Length: 107
Image 1 (cartoon, rainbow, N blue to C red):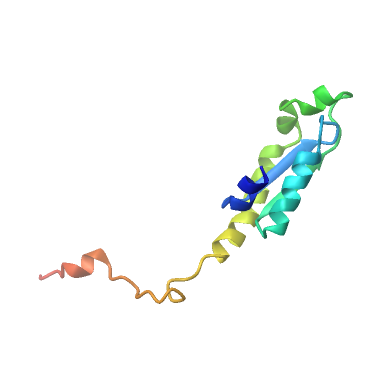
Image 2: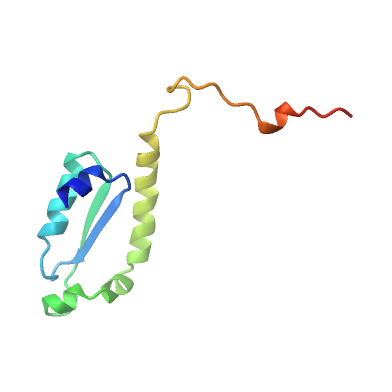
């Protein structure tokens, strides 16, 4: 799993309820992402229910507004990813002409 994380190219949001069965995979993989300077976030939600089985249920995502959290994460993560790409001038590229400039209009 750690190799997959090191090779990840997309931002990753790790999330679990605090009373899920085991939080160590999310914690260690999130830490691996940070060490590899990858964009990620670990979000631990308050306990859901009273047992690890209840904490593991996916419906917690809906009730805790995970959709809004994902949108918020994307809004902060994507600019960080895009800023890591070199610009065309940094690559030594010449700005391409418009496809239509090859066909001048003669009126």
